[in-house]
Every structure is written in structure tokens, then in C-alpha cells.
Image (cartoon, rainbow, N blue to C red; front, side):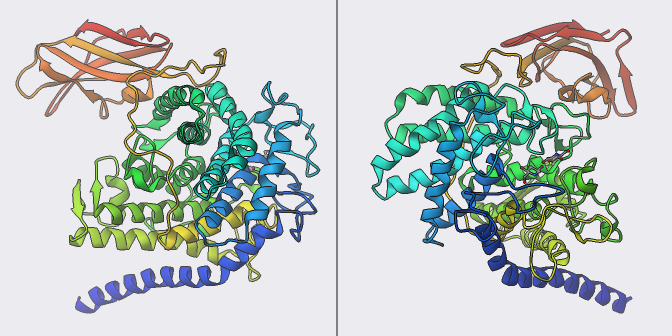
Length: 579
Ligand code: NOJ
Ligand code: NOJ
């Protein structure tokens, strides 16, 4: 008995230590390889960039990635700009300047999505000679302008700090403004998701648009372009409101796209958490910060979606790290795990650890409970101060869990350290595009977060989600997929006995999709009128019923269902008598 116990403790400790020492070793060997991998693929003298300012990968067949994608390039350069502005690598300035100047050129290139003033900024990729790519493609993709303006604003803020005002206002601001105006006008239009497949509204796209508009408003203020501020700020509030609608409360995860007909579990959501991380925003759930209860619950659901589908994950404990891919239904190039998605999980967890350390506590809510139960089966909701044993237990386990994702990538990185796009779900061999610039950049940013390093935030702290969403983008004509939500108050008259309560469920996520178990409790503050206010999708037919529940009792209202059509905007009150 005693030996068994000791063996388990030692086994756990060795397992934990093994993950972290594998991660340590991988960081030590891979960091310089990843940095060199990025540099080889960018800039006129990059050894693999073939003269291009940036390529996604030097692969030219199956798949041909010798193009400049706005998303990949912007994410990669954001990582480099952070290294430059933080003083970590002062040699990058020339490359950053060549990035901004080539993006200024690409903005003006007429392409199948339009001209610079008619939607062309949503074009996802260009030929490496800076001409338009004219073959069929999933276009437009509306995350590009947002990600690009975020990258350039972070560089411009550093230049302003260092007195280079003229270059910022005359050269960079016009580039930034084109992108921000595009986001302001088009955020509520549908487009293709970051994986270039689903044409709808997409969580990653909406979230990075929100970030861009917030920091765009602050940046415009900083340089005295005050006429832009209210437009960006107004639309930022509307985008933040819409962002909430991706949350699936019954599933405990963020649904990646409004279309697509998939389960909705998608690396899109984890990538959002790390690319909209603001160290000053605490564990705010409205912006899905890495340590927010919603983002942690989502991380668990996302990771669990890959446990049983990949052979290389078999035999791994249910609470240990596994290889993850874009989304479980993926079949592109075999539908395998990706380096950049697996390591993004680690990065989200490192970001969370940074903020818990700053806050001096961990707050476990009913939403994040399943995430934390992976590490402590007896954990309850509550706030655990950094002086408590529970805090130490949880943070040690989360750190080890995070290191596990690094260790998984380490296991499937070939001996030369090269990072392709994917590795085989059946045997871990590299698959698809070799030397993917984004794989290397994602590795670098995760390694940085692991050391506790943070970069300037973007104003995510203390934001208020408007009670009612408006979808009227300033320059747009509707018709988009970004249908917002409206606040609907349900009042129902019901006489109940002591211990009996009234609940509601119905045909939409926000009403828990006809689940009597997860039905929403109404307030009896104005008894016998029971009441609740719920954000429901605008302009939608919604069916619902009230339920009486008491211990051992569950009584549905009699048929038929009740139905309302929600208004396009504003709020709405519905009054019923329990049937
Ligand atoms: C190429 C895109 O780059 C990739 O993301 C997508 O999965 C496939 N096309 C689908 O065919
Ligand atoms: C396919 C990925 O799905 C997409 O996100 C990326 O932009 C391109 N490959 C280029 O790396």
C-alpha cells in the first residue's frame, strides 16, 4: 500500500518533470532554429524567400505556399515587432520597414476582392512579386486588415515614443487608416475564416477586428486624428457585443464560425485568446482573455476534441497534453495535427499563468470548474490566493500541462528542427508545407510567454459589453452574417409552492437549446411575476417554454411552444402566463 502510494507519487513527479525538462531542452535547441526559420522566409535577403518580402513557406507543390498572405505576414511581423520594440532584437528595423512599405504597395493592388476603396483590402494573398493572385480562392478574408493594423500600430507607437512623429503621421498612418476604415465599415459582413474554408462570420476575425478598432481609436487620439476616434469606438462596442454571441453556454466552448456545419470546436478560438491577450485585462471573459473562465473551458473542450481522433494521441492520460489540429473534422492534407495550433494551447496557458501571478489569485467559476478539475478532482468554485496550497497545486499542474504541449511538438519535430505545417496523425512525420513561417513564429511567441514575458496591451481592460447590440457598420449596407443580439425580457406569471422555481429553455443557444437540465432560472423578485433578460439573436424566430422545477419535479408547459420574433435591434419584453 505504502509502496504503491510512493510509486504513484514518484511516477507523477517523474512524468511532470519529464514534460518540463523535455520542454526546457526543446526551447534550448529550437528557439534559435525557429528565429532563423522566420528570417529565412522574409525580406529581400532571406535565404528561402526568393526575394519576396514574406512568404508563407518555400513549398511550391502540394501545397504551393510561395505567396504572401496578409494574415501570416501580419502575425509573423507582430512577433518580430514585439522583439524589436522590447529591445530584445534591435537588428530587425530594416525588415520591419520593408514589411510596412510592401504592405502599403499591396493595399493599392487591384485584385479579385476589389480595389483599395471597394473591398480589395480583404484579399487574402498576393503573388510574391506583389501582383494580384487571380485564381479562385476563399475570398475575402476580413482578418487581414485588422491583423496588419495591429502590427503596424505597435511599431508606430514605438516610433512615437522615440520621437519619429513625422514618419508615423505621414507614412504609417495612411496605411493604418485604410485598414481601420475597412474594419469599421465591413466587420459585420461575412467572409472566409482564417482557414479559408467557411464563408460566414468567424470568432477569430471578429475578435481581431475588435482589438484593431480599440487600439486604432487610442492611436488616432495619440496622433491627433480625432475625427476618426468616435467611429472606431462606436463600432468597437458593437463588435464586442457581437463577439459574445459565439459563446456556447451549454457546450462550454466558443463556436468558431456562424456557418460551416461543424461541431464548432476550432483552434481559431485558442489563437484568438493569445493574439488578443492584454496583460492588463486580468481574466476578463468579455474579451476571452487567456485566463478567463470561458477561454479555459473552451481550451479543454478544444483539446479534448483531438484525444481520440489521432493515433499518435492514443494512450495519453485524459488530462495530459496531446497533439491538436485546426478542427476535428479537418481533412486538408490528411487532416493532421499542426505545430502552430498545438503550441498555441501552451501559449494560452503560459499567458494565464502570467496573469494569475500578477493578480495573486486564481478564481474558479462554475464555467472553468471542468478545466480545473483536470488537475484537482476535488476542486470547488472560489478564489484561491497565491499563498494557498490550492493555488500552488493548480499553477504547478497548469505549467506542467502547458509544457506537455511543447513536449508533444518536440517529440514530432525532426532532428534538424525544421517545422512544417502539420505532422501525421498516424505516425508524427512532418506533413504539408515545409518551413512554415507561421509555425516558427508561433513557436517563438509561445517560448516568450513561457519565460513570463509580456508586451504592451491594447485597451482590453475594463470594457463594458453594451446591453443591446447594433449591427449597423458605418459604411455597410447590411446583409452580413454579423447579426447581433437583442436583450429580451421574459416575464411569466406563475404561482408556485415553496421550493418550486420557474425556468426557461428554447430553440437557440442562449436559451440552452431545449435542455431542461440547463434551462435558465427566472428571478422571483416580483413574484408572482418571474423574470429573466437574455441576449437573443436579432431578427430571429425563437421558440421557448417555461418549466416548473422542484426537487423530484420537472413540469413542462403544455404544447404548443411559445414563439416570438426578435426585433432587429433595441430591446423587447414578452409577457406570458404559465400554461
Ligand atoms: C487551401 C487553404 O490554404 C487551406 O487552408 C484549406 O484548408 C484548403 N485550401 C482547402 O482546400
Ligand atoms: C493554410 C491556412 O489554413 C491559412 O490560415 C494560411 O494562411 C495559409 N495556409 C498559408 O499559411
